[in-house]
Length: 637
Image (cartoon, rainbow, N blue to C red; front, top):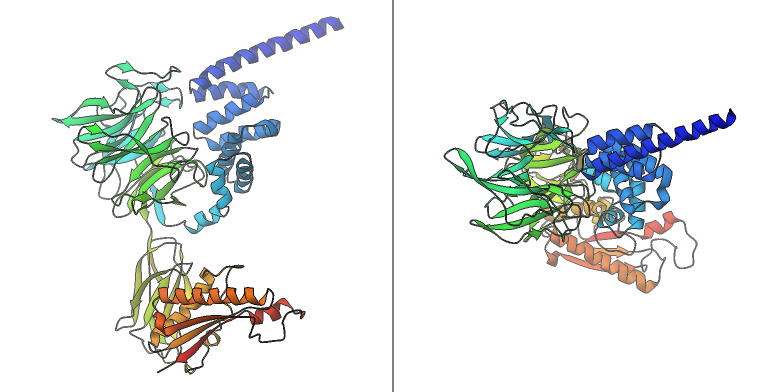
């Protein structure tokens, strides 16, 4: 009997194993054909029965990852790392990091980015190594926009608004209004069509209608862009035209960019662009302002990553050779959904640039004939999930798409407006409350870069407009015969005004030849980094005080004297202090003081204020007294 039980148990295990193997084979076929929803369903049933393997967890994690469900991807990548972390390909460290961000676990995400960088020579890892404080930078840049949902959204995927005359055209997988009802294996939603809606005066939209039976087919259409005259459009479509479906070498149908023209109210002459191919995808076209360049995304050979941003010139009805925008923009990850504003600045979505998780939206300024290092648009535009399909107008208003937690459907369209603040106030005498018209008012950013300057009007009123919300500024107010006043002003997180009144105190100190301005303004040290002589932001803040006094007294001349402590050789200290003094002079010249009014010299350790010379034991506090800067008034009319 015991033998019978053992035999039956072994047969049961064998049959269970065979059933699991059959299920996995079926799921693998679904996975290979990008039928991620169906593949997930089978893989999870197998996993729920206790089956574990690196391949199973990889494919489960990937299926969720490529379907934009990063929080679920994190779960299965976590199982993968718990099972077999030592033998994983480096790319899984990157994907797991991205997925962890979706769950808000940035500390752990950065840990895996660190390991990813150690294991590869990948630009994504190098970016992290160079910018480990990227989350703080994103946080400081947050709050510049206000966002809201739109009434275009359905329970399905809706994304990518494009202006078309008085209407907007967007992509949707909704069933209402669809010409065909065919389910896409990748998403388990309807294949997408283009829909149009007009915008009402209150910013809401009319009920969307199917855009065109000549454009929409039973497969995917998406991401349109239109010429200003509304007679030509470019759009993305599955490799399907004139009833024929194209496939690549793996029998998969990819996506291509198509062109169509409007004739007598109907879209005709639908044709694919000449640089398309059955063996790679081209997608998400957008026109430049002059309509002579088409930007798009592609995974064509020769790129940097999974998809790159390209541009191609348009010459009438012909096209040039596509040009990759290069490694400043593109990474080994995904760059997609380009948009170019009226100033030729590029906005795009990327998961390879440093961000909050998933696809983030970035801006690259066009300057001196090339695109600059991309800047993350920060919160609330970006989230820990996928954010993409950004467009913006000349008034800094626009739309973007996100699958963040608050979304109604799979992907939702959001509106945004640039959040603007005004800092304003009046300037008075602190003792008499007398108004002080003519006062000079300067505003700086947090790093003491000068942004703007104004003069208080005859009612002693000043204001600075078009400032960012939720941002720190430094405002400095000065007037002849009064002490300069300065303070940090933090703007609110919503549109509006921030009041900042200043009350100035009359000078009680004589400014004459021999006066050390550093003592008047309590500037003991102009800080420099170790062995450096460039002006730091905190030093710039103090130097600006000297600059303002010299502007109040245009005949004043000043000698800049830099001193060190005795810790280093005499020669080293002399050279370093001289470089620092001259760097200080150059800063003041750059900020408006004539060079002829300044001299600069480094004295090294030759004028110590105490006995802390070579070999004398002194505390750090005692050494610090010797590290000082002097600004001696040498001429005063």
